[in-house]
Image (cartoon, rainbow, N blue to C red; front, side, top):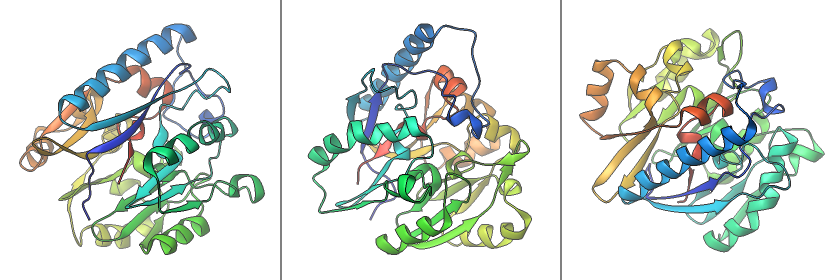
Amino acid sequence: MRQSTNKILMIKPVNFSFNKETAKDNLYQNKSSKSNNEIQNKALEEFSNFTSILKSKGVDVIIFEDTNHPYTPDSIFPNNWFSTHNGTLCIYPMFAENRREEIFKFKDKLIDIYNPMQIFDFSKYAYQNSKFLEGTGAIIFDRVNKRAFCSLSKRADKELFLQICKSLNYNGFTFKSFHLGGEIYHTNVMMSICSDFIFVASKLIDENDRENIISELSKYHKIIELTSEQILNFAGNVLELQGNEGKFIVMSNSAYNILSSEQKEVIESTLPIVKVNIETIEKIGGGSARCMMGEIF
């Protein structure tokens, strides 16, 4: 089993805009004075450039195009509603009602393409139990070592997390983390696991959990410590992929620019860095490069 894949799903936006439902606890979203049409056009430009760069590196990019109805302003972030695991497809319960519509739009299409041997569909818990677990936003999978990490929040239920870990035969580790005076809503804001190292802002982890989590993370990987300011610039929201010339890491321009020269040297001694300009998507959507890519394993 590899940590990274050469095949991903991305959703082409048609109505990208500020999502009022998710802004209640996503502290990284920002309103804009631009019209929704201007925001959508800029997001589409950034998306198209992003996918072109990935394809030029040899990544197999599957693109689904969104529809205007029902209204799904965050569909550009598909990693929150599904994950794949060597023939197993997991579908997750989403917190915002307008994000649950993404599952109805795209699930059957994904099943047709992926042809899973088994499906774990947890999406019903959003309606039946008001419990949520937002995919690889909430869960950081260490696929090689069969371990998973989750920062608990309204969008990351502990019981569901442990249930999915049991279903996939993973060891699960939970913790709490805080930033900007509130709960971190998605684990992948402050943590990313690559083959050789882990990006993590350990100082944002609750003191009661910090020592144990860092100890576990350090067992198999080198730690790249991130600061609060670097998290604000999405330096934790990165992803390792496989290309024609081997592994590389994808991050936004803002993430790259906020890294220190020492951090870049450590990363680039192992992996080339591929940068993408997604400034509008980051600012309005409160998510970055990793959130835009749903991995196909």
